[in-house]
Length: 492
Image (cartoon, rainbow, N blue to C red):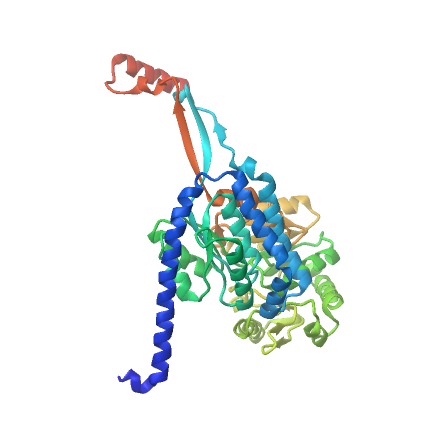
């Protein structure tokens, strides 16, 4: 086939230009990567004071550029300024403050006791920088989930290359400008681009990769890192369940769940994905949820769409995907109990509750990542447990109940990355808690000291001061054999 005739000379020229641009970016990435490898060797000797100074510069730049960040988040997601403060800037500042305050203690060697067989030795754990790190951020919180891991990487003494999402171009440009003002390229660098950029970066031999995104892409990232035996932290997602029983305060629960499902238009990895609700309180919950949404966003679909406090879906394709989940459920027999209006052109999805959703509906199988919630009734708590355990381990589990025995049963009967009782999303905001998934919903932990450890190599160091270990060396004389037998008897 004559592709010149089919595509035309202009199309071929554009394709060649794109290929050249990608090739040039790859060369530039390799150059910067080599520079960072040299800096990473120097930073192995970095002090807490030096690392804190870098974090302070980053924090100051974020606060100085707040207006630009607000404008970019509004352009990409129509994210309200208050929500930008709450879920983006405040989280980054909090992470920075924690590192600044506690880094000296995090960096201290941790002494560990010697075993009986190693009497006369002294051991400790030393936290060392991993080296050059890659941070790939998603689009739903493009400031928080880019700079939060960077703070942990800097606290651990690493250099870093950042890859922001191409789906939030305004924010990505603000982040690029900010990073280039604060850091030299051999310290922290940032490269924009789509899949080709991520693929090229993943081919490099980084010392650690921190990825936030979907489980499907997480598997691709992990496979790419495995080729270089690069360690990974994967912050993924999945279908996080919310369990509500008849003992719960239904009004309070509805307010909390509505916040978790409507914040950022439900585009949150730890957002409640679906509800497992005791049959006797389903209608009461629906009524309270409807009331709280109307109070916070507007009494009608039109008012909610006009609300300045409601974020938009990232693009039309994702809006169509969410609409498709609703349509598929309804076609299979589900009923819309609340909401249901979608305006694809405006990227608006009304907060929506679905009931009587049959098995096999896509909305029960795919991560929703939007302000739509299917409700699944149960009469026996074991039904809820069976439903959760039939799927992959979720990133979050939410339980709304006043029954302590019930809460304990739900926690011990399930596995999830994190859990929250009678609240929603709050676990992310406590940097003292380890944040992360379990298996399909993630590998490794982040935030505070846990993020510091994720980007650190825990190096075990042992020192022999009395040369006791030489007693067990060959040749194995009768004395050595008796000594070893005595040691076995002692240990047993």
